[in-house]
Image 1 (cartoon, one colour):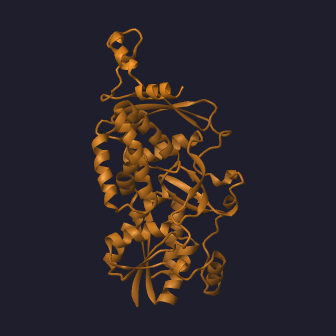
Image 2 (cartoon, rainbow, N blue to C red):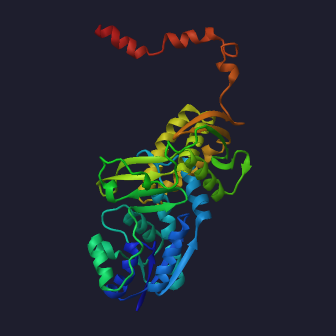
Image 3 (cartoon, rainbow, N blue to C red):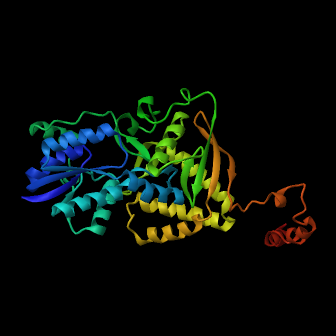
Length: 390
């Protein structure tokens, strides 16, 4: 039998895929679960199920690599897609990379995943796999056109223990949670409180506001409240602080790659906190033209991530440009958190372009009289136009 390495989460889709790959494709199945900061119980469940049904199982700890090589790049780029910070999409190329490494180690012929034909992850996994591997790709759920009910029926017929059911379809990593399905498929229904796990409601958030100081070095966070932390611990701490105050709840209708609209709920407390702070520091240290261009870069960078094009050369080109600008994005930002709101209240940098003596009404660093000529000719084309037509 040929070997297939299956990107394994332990959910219904990937569990059913084990048996489908054996029965329909004549494969010995090696499962690979990549730890990018999801719930520890989910990883344990995946290990338990995999050891019961698969030929061999791997659990790969990739949290450090995820934060340092993916999350930090997303912070520097302010990677926001259609209004929310990317988390699921950001982790997919790393997961695919780790699965490819296992396939190479095991000399497997096939890499498999449990994606359906309606979602985004099929693009994200397969574009990465094809960019770095010559393995054949198999997607049993999509290729056999199975519905969720058909998967459950198949599992029962083949004696497969269905994983403990969850009310919603959830994807989680250290940078955020995405929640969909069930009642959430109706965009006219308010998300029930049981959707959220990382953030307090505004009613349960502390009554008193809290100030939090984030220090950055070349665009990446290095300390919280003047305490230096390792990258993974920075994100965990930011999740804890922001989540306590109800920061990072997002309810959005987004456009999937294949063109359909989907209602998604996200929890991204750390991302909301750190990207807000980062953008504020950029406002202090970058020029007006750089900031305008940053908006263009941010939109394109997020689009590449969302569309599964992490290995597109343009992303690497943008990283080089971003890194060059981020050399000056060093300093500290203080934010006030309160009942779901986040507000920048102070910022400081050795590379600040702000000059108090220039803006102050009590200083003469700028001779006001010299501005008269500039003001006189300001908007001159509009002036000429209006004289012609009034």
